[in-house]
Image (cartoon, rainbow, N blue to C red):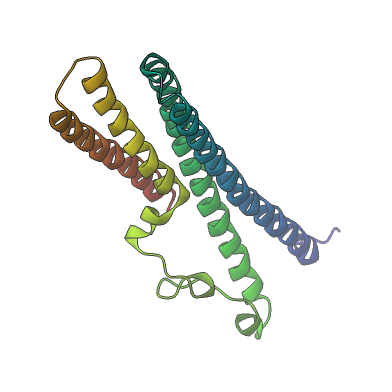
Amino acid sequence: MTDERPDVSALNSAVGTELFVLQSAASSTISEAGTRSSIYLSTLSSGLVAIGFAANSPALIGVLAFTVLPAIFALGWFTVVRLVDTSVENITARQRMELIREYFVSLHPRGSELIALDTPKSGELGVRYARSSFLFTMASMVGAVNAVLGGALVALVLVGVFRVAELPAQIAGIVIGALLLTATLIYERRRIRAAT
């Protein structure tokens, strides 16, 4: 007759391995988010420097502004979408790690003394998360910069192509930028709420 009892040591080993894999995944999402943010901001900075060098030539500055800036704006949207993806991946990994830590705490009476568990009041390791915490992510930062770029592009098009006066063009740019930022934050908030 075979032993039907579950192999607890095998489970503990598998759970420990899973925790390590999840920690690696969470770490890689943070690294990727930082790299993507840096790529976007470097590209934007380089594009603005190139336009600055062309400032003495109205024809060249127009060509650069209407080719480089829209490309950077599109890159910004791609970056925001991927940064939100990495945030969701990180949240999912952290939730699964929390379940594993709860299991480890249950293995021994002193487990709760030695293993920190997340609590809604304090957050893991004392970091408090609120409904507005998503405003301070890398996705929100890139989204805010990209919204400013989008608003500036609208103003440039209105002044440079349609010969609209500067003040109405600037107001239109501000409105479009605010709408772009709002759309970005709504998208991010919905994706993160679905993950949590």
